[in-house]
Structures are given as C-alpha cells and as structure tokens.
Image (tube, rainbow, N blue to C red):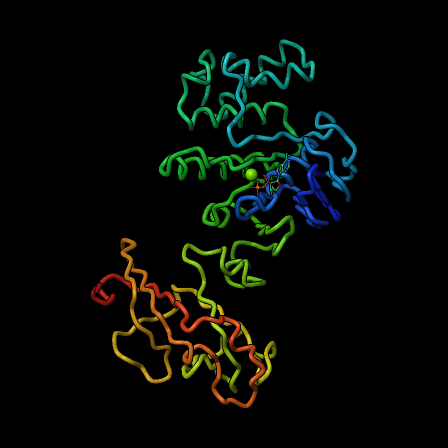
Length: 356
Ligand code: ADP
Ligand code: MG
C-alpha cells in the first residue's frame, strides 16, 4: 500500500512565503499523478515536503498506513528525481546508480546486480563506465531515473522530469516514462507546468495555484469540466474563451447573440442567471459572413498553427455584456470591464479569413 494522503499541509518559508496553504490531497496507490500549475504555485515545495526534504509547518503526510510527517527523507521509502537530475559529475553512471544502495548499506554483491538490472531496464547497460558529462540530456535523465528506481521505493517523485529535454526528445521520453510507470506500477507524482504533458501522461491531475489545489480530476474531467475560471484558462492548448452570459430560457444570451445551452447544464442553471460561459476555441465555428444570433466581431489576428488557424476576434462590449433585457442592472454583466472582449476560434485549413 502506498497511497499518499495530505491533510491541511502547510509550508511557510522563513520570510513568510506561504508556499502550501492547508492543502488536502489524496493520491491513490499505483497512480501516475500530475501536479500542474504556473511557476511559483508550490509544486516543488509539495514534492519536497512529501519527500521530507522540507519540514511541514502544519498538517500531515501519510504514505500507505504510515504517518511520515516527522520522518527524515531516508525513512520515508520515496525516491525523488530533481529537475536538473543532480547526478554526481565525478562518478561513473554505475556509481551514480549504485549510490543510494551504498548509502542504504546494501552489500556489494546485490548492489552490483541491482545496478546492472536497473541499467538494463533503462537501456543504459552500454554506458555504465561513462560520466554524466559524456551523456546526452536524455541519457542523463535515464540515469537519474535509474538511480531513483534502484532502491525499489514505494513512491516516485519527479520534478519537471522532461523540462530539460528538447521538443523531440521530450515526446520520446514522455512515452518512455508512461510505459515505465505502467510496468513498475509504483505510485508516481510528477510535477509539470506544461498542461499538455499532464493531460498526456497522468491518470489524474491536481491543478495548483498559490499553494492550494484548484481542481483534482482525470485529464478528461479537468479539460471538459474545469471547476473554475483559473483551471479553464490553464488547461488546453489555447486558453478557453470566457464571456459574460445570461441564461435566457433554453439559450444563453451573450450580448445580442443567442447560443444553445450546453446539454449538461440543464438543472444546474436557472433562467435569468448571470454566469461566465467558457467555450474552447476548438468548439466554435467561424463564418466570414454575419450569422443572425451568432457572436459577431472584427478579425484582429490570424495565426497559422499548421493544419488549423487560430482566429482572434474583437467582440464589442454590447455584444458580450449579456445586457439583453435591461431588467436587472446589477452590474454583474460588466465583470469584464472592457469595451471589447477577445474571442478566439480554431478554424480548419482553408476556412480562415484573409490576414489584413
Ligand atoms: P513551483 O515549483 O510551483 O515553481 P515552488 O514550490 O518552487 O514553486 O515555490 C513556491 C513559493 O515558495 C514561491 O513563491 C517561491 O518563491 C517560494 N520559495 C520556494 N523555495 C523557497 C525557499 N527555500 N525559501 C523561501 N521561499 C521559497
Ligand atoms: Mg518547481
């Protein structure tokens, strides 16, 4: 059993930065779990606090049945791979992989066989006598993984394991990591600021902001049903469009436009309610001519993304102010505050407007 349970976990650094703010999170046994969020939101701190490299200011961490909150790193049975791999430059690959086994006072013979087995698993057998400086970035990363794996820990903690690789290697390493985790079945927490990476790899994702968890769910859940506008804006290759709207019968009024209410919103909204409507640029259709009832705006930018284009439209405020009746002038419809709202649409090749 190696589920990880965090309760009201808090970390305040000397100087007062509250990097973790009474955070609650449960990671299941054997899960491949992503911590996703912008730089500075507390991802590394959370990982280091699970590892015992940071002392929690409050709350608790359990691994399996054990409360490990007060235990030193060596007693937690976790292995962490650091963002910069932190390999020993003066040691061979063999000695790097064997190092944690030596610290654990594993005898020389089983140290040798464990190192060789792990190296073989990670395709490093031919590189054992080299030093880290003589390896590519991808090979260095595999050595860091091997060093973490050699001890057969209950939990793997990976801090941005792919961020130092170039784009093509990154895709390869992604697939490799996923396959490895499946084979080992070890509870794995990996940190990333790249939403595409989290969506592609993880069984579940926690989206973090300011030391708190904003949503936990499967990739499909956080993509399809973001719990708040922060998650909506963070997940997806292009940010979700967020416009002020008002429920109008079985339609949504966005300014003068009338859009169909999403199927799954019935029973969850009431007539006349003002809300923020989120729609992904991929799910809007673009028409070069004005369509009655549709959002209308001026094309300001057309970006070529390869097989599709991303069209940015400026929609005037009276089209997004949701001020369709004038009956309720509470001002909520002015939440956007601007005179115009930018709306983005993904358009298939050939359907885009002429630039300029
Ligand atoms: P992330 O990994 O998501 O980028 P971090 O966990 O590294 O975020 O940092 C979270 C917050 O804690 C940031 O505001 C950062 O500046 C602060 N922080 C991180 N490490 C320390 C430290 N050793 N001392 C003081 N503040 C720190
Ligand atoms: Mg970090």
